[in-house]
Length: 242
Image (cartoon, rainbow, N blue to C red; front, side):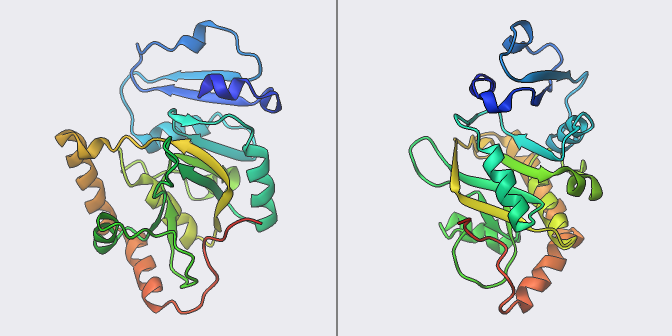
């Protein structure tokens, strides 16, 4: 992804912050000049969680928007300018593109409130990104976020009690409860192949379950669950951009 982004002249001078969670991990772009990007590499002395890593990177952010990007995304065009323009028009504090995998199938990156029964629905293939104007909360999986820096700072960034998994839900939930608008732009599409590590590894599965238990005992989840229960015709949280 670094090479792809560096090919985009419109990103000239943009600061790209890369965190290496293992301090001696090799990173080829450290030793070669980049054409457009301003590279900042953070090497952790010990591994940190997803949220802590991004909060640490945010301390070096000097712009009004902060992008959170998984390294296995494929970004071959400048989608950032368009997303920021749309977010400003819609007064959104967090905006995401539509996510597809490399085979052309739409990923389930837009989801219902993370209750136990929502997981059952996902396993049954019922996704949360339908177009029903039911007033319910939706949240975005965290492979690509473009978030307003002031909004991120106001809620304190990611909750570092989540080491891995569910920190994206928690961020969206707290932003939603703080009155911030979350926006999905289906017109802009990004390719990402989800690894689903917790399906294959007992270690990651246990980590995932631990995070789910934290979510299910959290105040934001149940505040949203009660709102969803009583929702009738509130404005939609997700609307395709024009």
